[in-house]
Length: 181
Image (tube, rainbow, N blue to C red):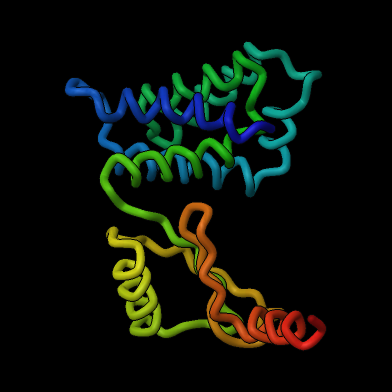
């Protein structure tokens, strides 16, 4: 799956969401897209139906229409998913959700930071990290936190293509590099 391709689909969808006569707010679109992505991720049967070449596109559309109706998803999101299915790209749904969120944030002047820590953080610590990253980047920052015990300690943050490595693992790797040079 090409990230550039996901970007093209996401750009078109986000442009619709920010048009003056948008039928759905960007926040509602994110919520609905997250909900649909969670359904696909949590159901092996649904994942198989959407990604199997043995299942016809009309059948996939019928399944999505039924799910959209039961879950109360908007017509605009349902139609977006139909386009993805019609183009043979249902495996991109998760990547599309991430791109849509990224592009909506960019239109709002918000940066998304992916923060990895070795241990769970308290809410105050999360807020402090978000504040520091906002100050460094000069933008409002929303953080997505995840755990990775291999960091040993500290924080690893990525905003766009910039990585801020304050992890123990990163410092040990830098020290090793200096000592072996």
